[in-house]
Amino acid sequence: MSDTPPSWADIRDAAARIAPHAFITPVMRSDTLDRLTGTHLYFKCENLQRGAAFKFRGACNAVWSLDDHVAARGVVTHSSGNHGNALALAAATRGIPAHVVVPEGAVRAKVDAITRAGAIVHRCEATQAAREAMASRVQQQTGAELVHPYADARVMAGQGTLVPELFHQAGQLDALLTPVGGGGLAAGCAIAAHGLAPGMPLFVAEPEGADDTARSLAQGARVEPFTPHTLCDGLRTLVGAPNFQVLRSHGVTAVTVSDEEAVAAMKWLWSELKLVVEISSAIVLAAVLRQPGQFVGKRIGLVLTGGNVDLEDLPWR
Amino acid sequence: MSDTPPSWADIRDAAARIAPHAFITPVMRSDTLDRLTGTHLYFKCENLQRGAAFKFRGACNAVWSLDDHVAARGVVTHSSGNHGNALALAAATRGIPAHVVVPEGAVRAKVDAITRAGAIVHRCEATQAAREAMASRVQQQTGAELVHPYADARVMAGQGTLVPELFHQAGQLDALLTPVGGGGLAAGCAIAAHGLAPGMPLFVAEPEGADDTARSLAQGARVEPFTPHTLCDGLRTLVGAPNFQVLRSHGVTAVTVSDEEAVAAMKWLWSELKLVVEISSAIVLAAVLRQPGQFVGKRIGLVLTGGNVDLEDLPWR
Image 1: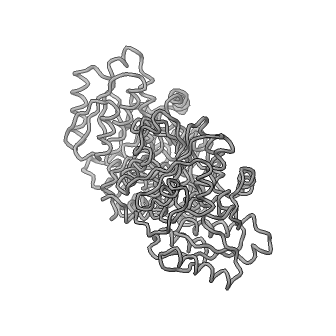
Image 2: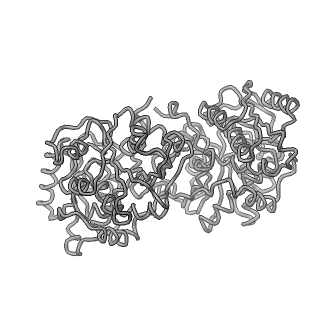
Image 3: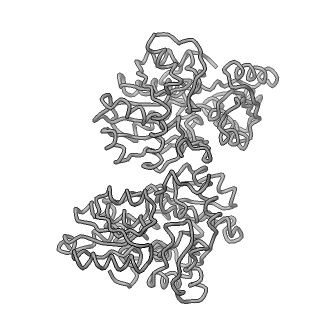
């Protein structure tokens, strides 16, 4: 709703608000991956969250924040997949309608899931402008409440709720690492992490072919929009304005990796953790491998953001 | 060691013995799979056990049951993969040598894991006779203690330790379902289940192309050995003699499924639970789908036995 980022108090409120609906996901370890990276890795398994992605947290917080008369008109969003699915599921927990604008090229498993979750799906071209235009149209036609996938403060707050869980489950951590697309997760986690552990080093992993966050942080302002090129379908979104401000003010460092590195990391995670995680999620392990000096010997919290993968179209063959 | 099956008390002892080393694995649910099957499914995730298979339990119980002077000479076994890997890992927890005889055709991921776990690997032809002969030879040469993959009472007892965990985690269950190969898991679980819940209906799932257990139970005695044909590489082993006696005396029912059904079930589990599980493990879901009338409306405990899969050789394409 508002472009003002949430506070740490908002995130604590969000945790209480979503508690009846969201799962407290497990944290997993792997001796092999610790040896491979020379670190101590704590994987927060949001692929095991409702809807198989962390985004259920933010969607749930947004849906349950609405006044009754607003909620009755439903919610609308545009999404590459996981947020749309999450919003559909969250809307269903409150029994309100959900409209989801999905761009062409979205992973089939994600589109199917959105439909199964009971949402009304609207397809559009795969550009930022087309997504926003169609969402606007639906909003005007239905009066539904727009729940932006990452710039919405309620969404950021919801995503951040995984941090207090992770810190409690993992114990002392030296750094936190998340993927970054629009920055809803990254921003929410930054606020929560520094609410609990001021000054903790924070990192975001980004594909080289969609490195707007990295370049924006380097130059101190958001770069001009461009068309991303990456297999990481969940991270093609350009970082949002309020999200970027949060990352900047919290001193977040970006690490970019190639698609090849992301694929290799994905195989490592499937092999060693026995978890189905998306390439957009595996990128966090690729980032640790890309910059060993940064992380060696440290206890790192890594968020495995989702598991919605087309099993018939795996990136390795 | 002995052909006498373990008692429920032996399984309780095993639980205490392996507790410092084995993981208490999670139990997972899936609304979609419950709807698909018309049941309430409780998946015991042994793919998340040490070594990514339940077999670590049995191997660990065997290794830690040894007197010091026996342990010092090490352990030896023959295995399609998971038991060998488990024994190597278990031996490493006690700092003793492990020799593993592995047949040709074993899944590469499993052979690699055995080597990484520090065992000495001996390859042989893919027949029961060849496996046993080479294990015997190694035993004579090294004095190592033979730890049979499934007929050993200590191994059966170790496998059965997952049942008290599952019952505690799941609450009231109406039936238990495991895959069956040699029958180490099936037998250990039968004894434990009836120790806790006498008369609980017990089921084993078996590939049609390796249906020795099903036919043996039907005729009341073990069938003649035959060469199995199935993609379920972990279930090609013929049911052991003491194992069969346990299954018979506990009134276990066998359900056979085709490889196609097992592959379909594997895809369902990867998609819905976001877990990497072997085709030999997925067979339990295939069995529920094969006999809906048997299970509809019931609360079923299913053991997901392992996750050691060759990611470059998945059975669907």
